[in-house]
Image (tube, rainbow over all chains, first blue to last red; front, side, top):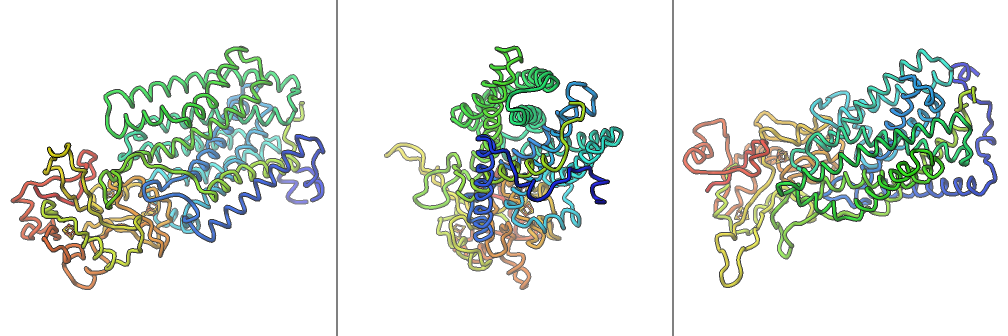
Length: 394
Length: 182
Ligand code: SF4
Ligand code: SF4
Ligand code: SF4
């Protein structure tokens, strides 16, 4: 096959693609994926039938769960790309084994992110047309979207050259993908950071925090991917890599906790309206305390500290908790930005004066968000069958 | 537009006229203009009468509009009169502008599935050659003065020269063009 001479693939039939090991965990994963994909389809149909009325987004809270989910996916993608570049771009030996798997993960997660956002943007096709015809250069969304488009092209080429064992070109595209990815991702932070009307988000914090939390997300995902692949029985090179990764992750988490503490302190200090009250609201919400702090930061951080980065098996499970935490970080970031109503007066009879804006995702939103995860698992599973993902040295 | 807001009696005729003129769909979320009411301050019987004011409001047609700055496809633009408008053919409904507008002036128009807002009746009354907006024409206490800020002889320019006024959320640097006359 011509295709195969360009992109090395395994010879597989359709039947092979659908085959899986009949082990409890694998069977569970397959059922889970099928269920999630069913949800995705249901959500998509609801959206096609009712448009944004299928979602609980409102005038005061125009961005909901799907924006958070998109951010979640692209954070994962950028994170995997950054962590994988440690090996084949920066040449740190231990991390070389992960490049293919991590880049594949980066492709799969960003494609899932695009699938989710396509169901949130009202007119995705029009977007592609006018993004080119009348670009809004002052818009962080324009930069973010355009750069992520370029980023996807870069990492696809990077992946192809990695499969072909072409180190020169894979390094070239790897470096390109890394730089464009970091630019795109900090622009995504700027989408929130540039909002002058929202003091809780406005400022330099988000663009920087996005890159930091992307690296943490990438590390969590690698723990999960390898933990699942080897069922916790790691071969030596993988074990060494994961132990090193654990130390890096510990450092990153320490920095993140430090950042968060100072962010909250500056937000509260002085009691500026629209910022201090929002910060107190965040600080007392279970989403933040249990989701972000406990699951997302403390559990993995404590495990790394206690074991001095040796307990990589425990870290696989801590990474699952970490990913749930990362999800809450994305969700809260979108929700908290819109916490303070911009209409400060009563505009209808019998209305209470506006206070914090409330939002609860609708069924369609939840279905598409979870379905996106199913899509990512499916794509990863198929790609795992199609390509040789582990370096031949193993 | 200048608003002699202390004359407003909160009759909401302007809201109704705007919906009628511009075909704004029904529903509380769907409005281009509104009248804000402050809660009366103080405990009975020492109520603070002065606190009970009505603030008619709408899109401020900012001279430095955050909504225009954030629009990825330039669907939001300044027209030749300096009115901030939305081109519904280019709007992709990313809702970024709804998030960025400091005045909550934007809503989703379900007829076109795009974002819309007050445009000073530019595509309805003004193209028909009229010189007033629907809210202005209907207001019984003559709260609203609409006109050309660039023309020093226009009524609005005169009023702004003669009377003290303020704008909303001025500190954000959006340079709003809705002036509240004191
Ligand atoms: S029509 Fe005039 S008086 Fe009535 S609510 Fe509107 S601005 Fe106020
Ligand atoms: S008030 Fe809002 S919608 Fe109107 S021009 Fe200013 S930012 Fe844009
Ligand atoms: S919703 Fe429409 S008008 Fe608003 S920023 Fe997006 S494309 Fe521009």
